[in-house]
Length: 482
Image (spheres, one colour):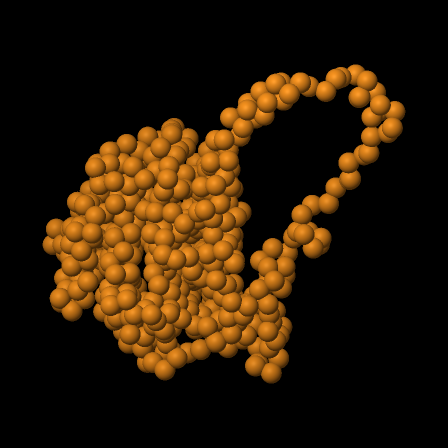
């Protein structure tokens, strides 16, 4: 493996979190210290106008004042209740997010960071001084992405390094070789963060909606191991990488596991497919999008098992595990790998409504990879205690939707995903497609402490899935017991 270093150490200077926010995160921030928009001051009323007001109406009676106060209280009560729940769930720097002033000396590995929000997260980590290991499936693309990250900070600002590494996560032998290299490189200092971001999907969902997708040419439905490709890449490859690197994690490290709202519509029973009994989605292409939903549910189940396994014995320096849902993001999942949009990293500027969920403009409700990358960086430092089951980018409180996560609702969730002709989900909050409307939500610029769907029948089912995953990878589940 080769490190790509940025500017020389002698030319580097410490960049503060505040400076990063101002110069790199949002170059269009207003210049006022408060960050708000300035506007004209309200005009003062003239003495004549004040006297006319006094003469025009009398002071209301005490009873009328009491009635108005009661009415106002009744009208305000629901808003106050929602606001209280909202504030309790909101995470930000200084409140549930422990963000250091500088990331110099901080090491992080991000899978799937040659494009999309993984690339943007790597760029932000690097600008703040971290040593970033950028993973991708292609050597050329990942090297190119690392070189772009090195140019992101400009002269003298970057303090970290960018290391490109390559492995097909659906190829378990390649993942083991990658883990060996990582253990060798970080045997002494350890990894401060491991971000399991990479994901693949089939494009059948958009086809079902009457749209065209740019599915990657030559994409196979079967992994080298015989498993479903999406399940192998999104779940089993990450399971293997995380367990192999467990002893390489630094004290109090963080593992971030990415999921999505599709997890709510995954079928727990479909997760248990062996290499010789995989679901042949190529024979039912229009339903192949469900493989992604199932893999995201597998990520949920895996994150809970990983948390229990890493924290077994309640060690004070045990790693934290953050399950993160970034919401709907303009990423490269539906783009051809060599397309102009993909290579230019311009997913936020898509205007082709024939590509995937962009059909009839649904995509404009998504957030950009830049915003999603920053949310991912922030989620890495989520420090609220006790750990939330899920860190989300939209207001999705347990108090309002706890009933939906119950195992008894699993079949109903899987079968009731009504989709309008233009691709817009009906009953957006009822069927948990809240992220489709995240640009209308208070949660667009915040993180929230939330929760994910139940895995089958709770802890028993999570343990069952953990052991199944280990066996599929040729591992002894008893050595990974929790």
